[in-house]
Length: 130
Image 1 (tube, rainbow, N blue to C red):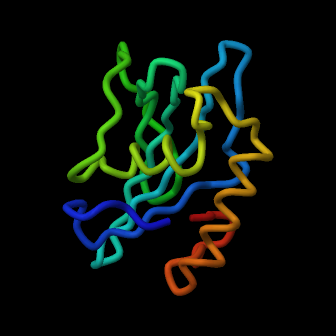
Image 2 (image 1 turned 90 degrees about the vertical axis):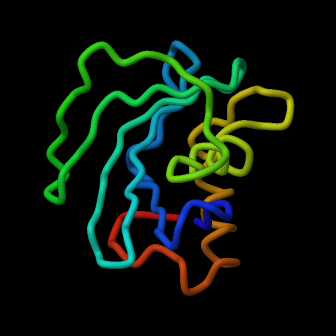
């Protein structure tokens, strides 16, 4: 998917298989941020759509091995800069207009629609989706 201006020329991908809506009403996902030089950062996060907050649970390496963050906390969703993708995921893909949650299928449908619109930006990395 495409992130907002100010987030650099990185590419952003969501692993379709990672999207899940928990019993706690948090939608969790894994996002891969790829720099223009090919360096990838993998992040496992959760969105609380009702309060518009995000929590980063873990960071991954290029082999998708995760290191859990010690004591992750909820914070505001970023709409600018390097974490601007969080705002895009919340407003375009994961949360509905009434601050509710989309089930996994709704998020996947929106991501697939963006993939077909974004064209060349679309999922070049296997199971990842944008």
